[in-house]
Length: 254
Image (cartoon, rainbow, N blue to C red; front, side, top):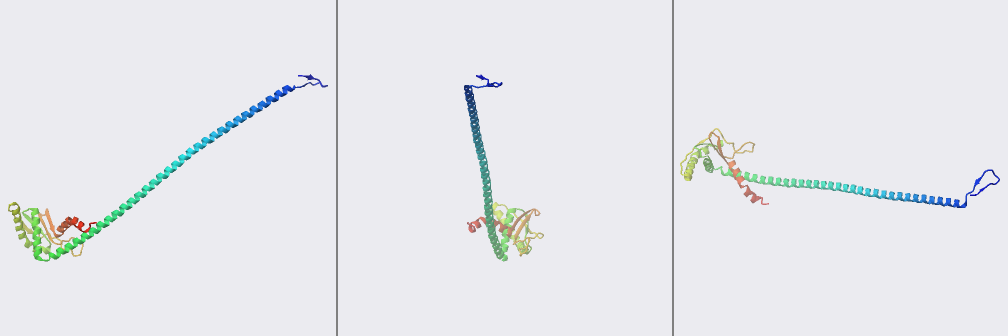
């Protein structure tokens, strides 16, 4: 360092060129370091930003996939529910249609059987207009009832219009009953028959509502506690019920 006085009382410091060069080099180095640090920080920030962005994108993709899968599952479940609902409705409609068809078929068959029943009643009424045939028919009905009861005293009930015919049949029916019991068992058994004049069967149907009877007899014993219904209506109903399988096979094969 050189000191000089240039006509001035104040002194000045002169720096040597080497010191100035060293200061300039240090400043440049500091600036480079600052630049490197700045660049490093920027790179780190950029990498961190990219990492955060990638992580956020990944999380978004995961959440998006979850939402999509959840929505797809909801749609699938809703479709299955509606599909099952439609299937159930179709099954109910099909079952209803089948049941309706069956009921219509049953009703049609019952109507046909009803017509057969009415035809049989009409045919029986026509045949029993003959008093001789009616007497024989009533005798057989009384005998059948006696064989079911096997009682010593039996009352016979009939329609008021059949009193005379039935009363004529009682002796023949009692004799036939005794003969059949003797033939089957070897025992002699008689039955006292009487016409019940207090209880009468209803008359034949005349197009009006209410109880009716085509004819026949009802046998009663033990003070009316035991009865055998051998009317034409009950016998016809029994025969018709037993003949239904045959009627169905003949008329309703399909």
